[in-house]
Image (tube, rainbow, N blue to C red; front, side, top):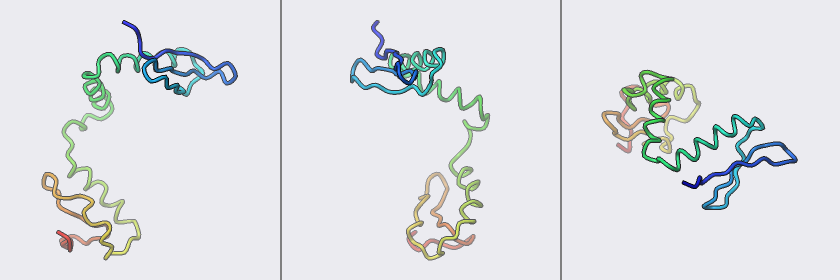
Amino acid sequence: MKQRFRLYRHSASGRFYSHDSVTGKQESLGTTDRSEAVRLLHSKNEADRQPAINLQIARAYLAAGDQAIMTRTWEAVLSAQKPIHMQLRIRKDSADWCGDAIEVGGVGCFRIGQEDGEVCALC
């Protein structure tokens, strides 16, 4: 089977590039190390050959880095971000921020700077 991406090296800069044989697009791989460039090129060709397995590979990489990633919900993410949002100096009556999180799996609408228990005017 013919590979979609080919590897070449630019003589002036020494950087490695990939050439897409379907679109003709050339993209820098961002490295001058041949072994790293070959590894990146193989991953591009593998992704083209088996697109269905990419999601499973991504999940495996994420799970290796963070064990709780598979069970974490948006509610946990938003509650972890709340202290950061509270530090921002934004007017309390700013309706622009309303609706950042709209009723998704038990997480209600919130507004930056909103006090606990305060109901959003648009909800």
